[in-house]
Length: 317
Length: 317
Image (cartoon, rainbow over all chains, first blue to last red; front, side):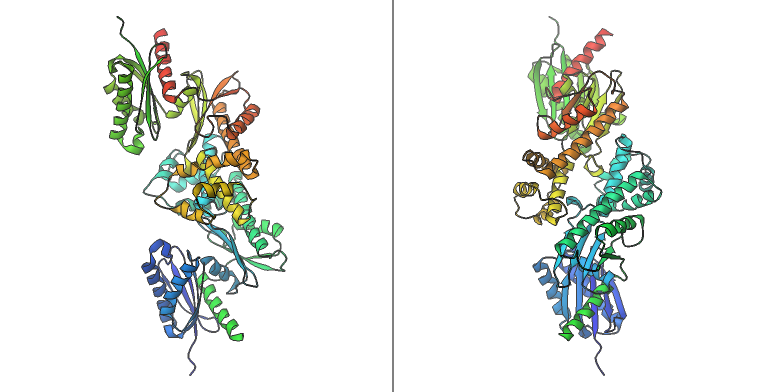
């Protein structure tokens, strides 16, 4: 009896690490979620433990064993530099001595969630932060944005949430129009007047970029009701996304390709909403050969399919 | 021999507390600088100690005694609410039982640094943060901005510095024009490439809004050399300042007054520079009855003259 071959995809982000196991037809056999695997946040030991647990438990659920794994693709946030990749590679070689492996930044596996494991196209992610990453048919890669909230990144949930706060304060000052955002924000933060935003904003016990990013949905909520200030915020940030997607297309010479998959990922744009609609509208004008798609599976599953595809490619050669 | 009458002004900010003592002709007799007196930052005991030390030492230098003080005006950052004023008022009543006192926010005494102790007009401060405050002939007061970096305040040093960082990252991404700001910023932070800005920006040991505000002068430096990105940053932020100055004029019905002193205070605008020039140019168009002036003395001296003026007014009545 021929030994079963397993293919693993791993998506490691700031909060969780998902591993998915597929067979040689791409059928999902098992998956497991463990804790954060960004070692810049949690340290090497904890990151290694999370990765090992996630892979081992997913393989156990698949009914196979670690020896059956022949190819694994990992996308891990914070893993960019050669020394990062060498470190994580060492962990994988110890755990899975029979497997080929490839290690990417998590933006790469986010791409594969929309291309079902194909490594061609562009992804734009707008969550708390935002980034665009692209790869052409020759394997050339590039990125734009991804600097994080302290350095900019218009188009991110953080910056949209910051603008919600800013325009509510400006409405109070009468330096900009009144807006529905005011009541929506006060309700959300359970305060009764704008001055109380100061206590909320500067409370040292309660900081974190995600707190501001969680206000971004107020902009889509009020824009839906026709609020002009909210609409102008979304206009600004969708244009910013288009700008840095376009720079990825330009740097990779993708402008003249017939069709380029463009995966819209991250909480602010990975489904139909007024913000993703605006984005797609602008893309249709500015980048007509971009084919926007939403993620069709998890990034872990995309990575598993990428592992399978990589294995098949190598066999052909 | 007639007993000497002393008038004291105190300007208490986030880093230092300046007291100035003048005689009944407005001549400076003594001054003293002590530490921070914002009790929200340093606690009540330390704030009280700083205020007592600053006043006592300034009076000692004037050659008089605390009993000679007949009027004192205090402007203290973070002192806004009635309970703040009651607290600080109690301290002053204990120290200076013979004196009348008035307690203001520090923006008020910044105004008096340009009006030489007259409490009429508008002040705009652009330092790390920014604010505009105004008072009319009837004593009506209002303000705009002053929310701090977490809630907006375009026109502040923090936001100008943030834009410097943002546009340098965008130039690197090729999502905006190349700019002289890049080399100026890398030189200032002593790094060789843009990626190193990430380490600088997220270093948990080295945070604080002032760090970003300290980058604002790079915008004026590069704008002077004709850099278009730097010029557009200064254009945006000078327009923001005009917007909230105008809201103060509007809310106080000052638009039809013949002439209204407008004091430009704070490190970014309190002297001739390309940023204050831009601001004055826009003001000339938008608020032709505003008469821009730079501070003519310290805010502590302004407050001392205000104390003297208040005393004279009360005597007349």
